[in-house]
Image 1: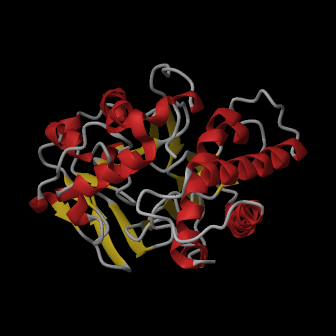
Image 2: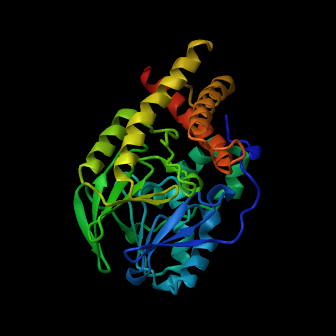
Length: 337
């Protein structure tokens, strides 16, 4: 099962820049052609970008940098939490405009930036006909431009010192990154997807990100516990934006993730027998059954929170339910539980 064209709206408007304080700004790169889906964080004075988004957002990111008074050629450091193409797909393209930039990446992800062949194949399998529009091209990164921090390592770039932690669960090549100067946590996808449109309406709603094909719920929760112990002041989500509702953020993951697994297992009980998934993934009927069950659970929760049925957040919800269903089915197929 791939993501269908009718699961996202049409082209997005011009880029937006959100100033977050502590010398940090967020550029909306309109991943999936959705506003407030994926952002690139920028420390303008320190010439640092943290997350790039996909290739389709590269021009928006470059335009946003210039609007912030930063010439792309002056960027010195690009940091990615992990190498999924919605977070790091634009790195190779951006390096053409950033001749002095080095790229900070998890040790398990470095070789896939150098040779993105497997990344591309995996994304094509999930996104099907939408791959070319959303993610192409993915250009290789020269190995000599990579910086690979170890778990627990501190690195200083510009005036900023960051702590890098190995945080598997969403993927085995995932970093949790703490800005030690301001106490901000760049969580990538470990803590899920923050629905910024709902947050603007006073509704705090986070959907755990269980996308294929390395999702591990136990590792996700353990990584979250490790990050929570650091007591960050602010959480910066890859999707999308920031919150200082830190306790609520960790609680949301710990409560909702087990519930999502149970929802999919319950949906499969009335389905034909489910065994280890073949290389191509679960069959379409199972994937749609799991997606529909997750989407219903999400909708029921939003209804209880008073969110109207025509809220724009629902456009993103269908996409997340689809991808999360695929990841949970893949996990069940690999582990049998």
